[in-house]
Length: 243
Image (tube, rainbow, N blue to C red; front, top):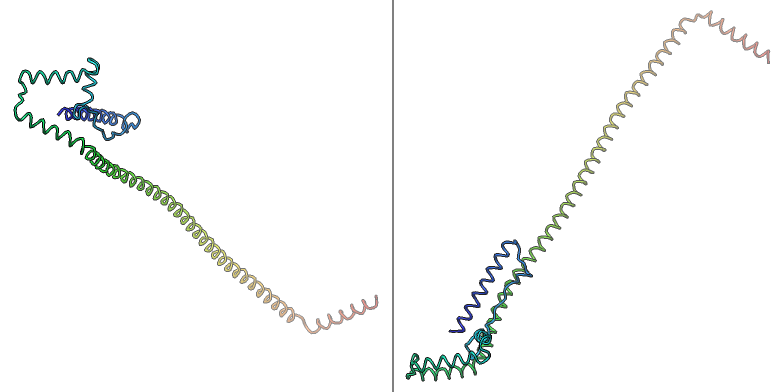
């Protein structure tokens, strides 16, 4: 019973510390791992005589020395027995025999049972820690996956930008091609108009020359033609005589 009281007091102190740590974490907004580390599994305190907490002996040691707790225990038992507060009836001897058997069982089987229980506790704690570790690992993997997704999204942005530039280049090429087509069509039509104008002018000149020649030829009489021919012969004779 004494050991249970000691364990309850230790659990109460631990819960108080956890509450204080929780309030400090809530005030700061993030957990302070240095000043407020994560709680670990508590171990039972030391005992003497198999069930008496060590703190009781330390309490007596500061006031009565080493033999104080034992003297107090023996004196208390003597007082209870002498004043018949605790009556030694037949159940007392039964309890004494049971105590001897319990002590014997604790000495013989206690270490093995304690080792088995410690192993079970370690296994349970390991499972809990493994679950926590797996959760943290899963969250870290999720963070890495999110970073990879962001990196891929940035790559998609670059790809979309490149596609936009390609579309702009295609539009520019189509614009230049259509501009060249327009220039070719306009030049062809202008060349056609120029050629048409030149042709009309040549036809008009030819028609005019033909008309003039025809009219001049019609206007020359045979006498004039003969006189002109004679004059040309005379001029040629004069030029020949000079040479």
